[in-house]
Image 1 (cartoon, one colour):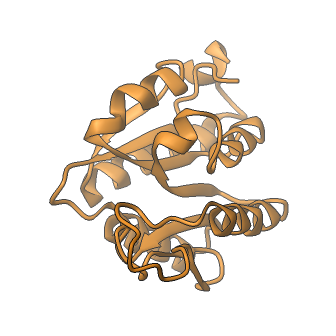
Image 2 (cartoon, rainbow, N blue to C red):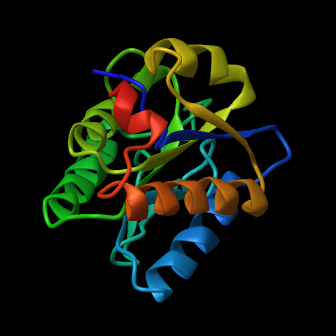
Length: 184
């Protein structure tokens, strides 16, 4: 599935960083500049009923939390709701995209579930993709991506620099192949 994809990036975040704000602001700016960003970012907290996702291509907010259960502990992610959100992103992706943003890489994606099919779909279509990856899941991400991923610090400047490199490579791809294109 993976080859020398220079357009696959992990926005690696620590416990006190907010990758969703970084990704959401970045997507909003790209959309305002005329790019088509497809994907979603997390809103709310995993451990309560506020867990949701914002679809970046439409602004729609989708609930991802399980129905309230006072006895439930830990992450309250409803897998059926996550799959529904993923289907909505896939539907939007079918209409084209300049960039795909996936809100998280975690245990489900590591095991080939969750939103892993969206990652594969974007890469198969040669669409750049960035995904938020917690530091504690980064080793799993590297195994999942076959080592073929750019590691970005969880800051806007790192994301902007990566995007400029991707946009520049796309602009000159027709005239001179990039190293990534040669290795593909």
